[in-house]
Image (tube, rainbow, N blue to C red; front, top):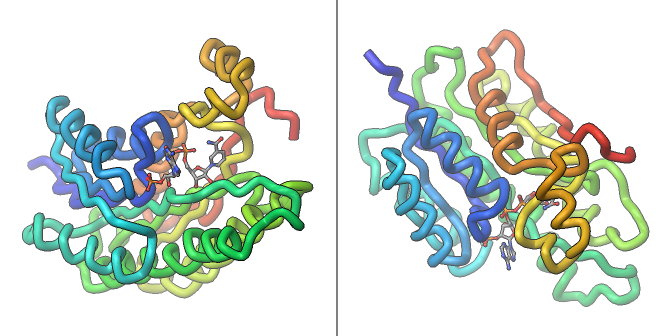
Length: 255
Ligand SMILES: NC(=O)c1ccc[n+]([C@@H]2O[C@H](COP(=O)([O-])OP(=O)(O)OC[C@H]3O[C@@H](n4cnc5c(N)ncnc54)[C@H](OP(=O)(O)O)[C@@H]3O)[C@@H](O)[C@H]2O)c1
């Protein structure tokens, strides 16, 4: 009999060109039912349709904003939509990049970075852990896997990253504490330091020349699909050898 995988939840689906959408597709192909969370309803409706056309099962769960109440209500909707399935893997991929000199960062931008990288991430972690904690162990000896997408800024501050890096450091430390606290309950928490540029639409405007070059050459950038495959690998580690932190970079990254 085929293994019943359960539900994969991704928050921060994006516009369909990055890690969020690639992860949704990879987990759908691996047999998970996929819950897509983002602020842009159009992107996730389109994403769910594509997964269903490809033979998978997916549903869009749009939210107005990243905040604790919205995250709680989205998890309730996911459970109501698939009452006979367990949430087994969750990915917090949401972020908003703020790259500016420190004195130009507004109080609103500080609130945004604290909210998206810490407060809402913690709310997402809480809902994930509450969903996992009473589940029976699966065939890997785990109740669930909670994944976080980090960045170079998770471990290194730089000239224009005071806000972004402060947020990403906070996310990383949240993930480390949770992995220690909940490992003993067979809940696997992992953080990925994405140390390089992920080729997404965002780079068309940010680095037009580089974007064209990266499209041709895998040496200099990360592919969203390859990151997603690493997330699937983390989710499928058995309880005897768990990774808390993975770092991923392309072959020619100048670190
Ligand atoms: N791209 C890079 O070079 C890079 C490098 C290292 C680490 N990361 C990390 O990777 C994660 C994002 O993955 P990704 O870069 O591959 O992109 P992605 O999966 O497409 O996700 C994009 C993220 O940006 C948000 N967003 C804000 N404005 C947006 C817009 N106008 N269009 C699309 N998305 C927008 C999305 O929120 P909604 O889903 O609510 O729309 C989503 O959270 C983040 O945690 C980021 O810090 C990215």
